Image 1 (tube, rainbow over the protein chains, first blue to last red):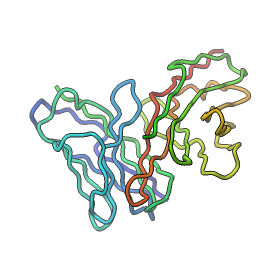
Image 2: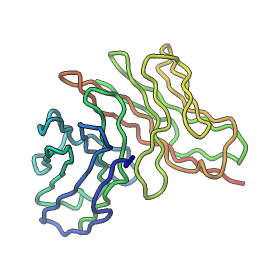
Image 3: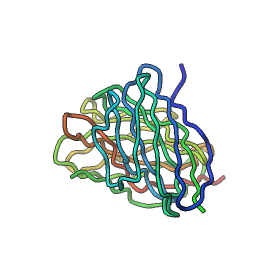
Image 4: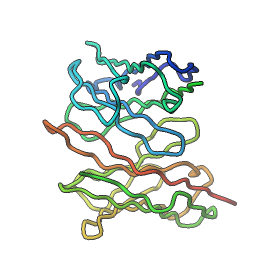
Length: 112
Length: 116
């Protein structure tokens, strides 16, 4: 049974560029949440997708957007990258309204 | 609003010694609480969770945690540390948002070092 997968594992971008990160949820899960983990900090909630709609987002600017596909996979897009966007981006999946989220290995983004 | 405070950003123990990682939460509603572990350059792995059943929760790798409502605490313990326990540990509370959906609010983490 495959767990949560994310791609790519590492990414280097320059300021002002745009980036797309991808996530496939654990088999049977229909809800995907995205978190940003800056170096030395705990993960911060970005947003959550269910039934292809964003149903809640954290305190992140509109430069951060996402999408969920009919197969429940998801993308996180970040526009106009800033140095401060350098972080580990974690995807977590769960069953709708279930309390437990399972995390993928993350994508480490470095913005130069 | 819900929040989590982890006391001690770094904890160092000897191999075979007791591990105690502290977590206090704030929640206006009965919380769901979690401990996750993160090994270097990896994602988060669920260690254990409290979801209003038994207050003493057993998890993987010999870890357990006790929910104490009166103290708003959910401390993580392991009787005997192993070198492989060296990692970053995160306590989290599940915040129910509109419609009953959930997001996780994490503490800042505690880095556990185990020395011979």
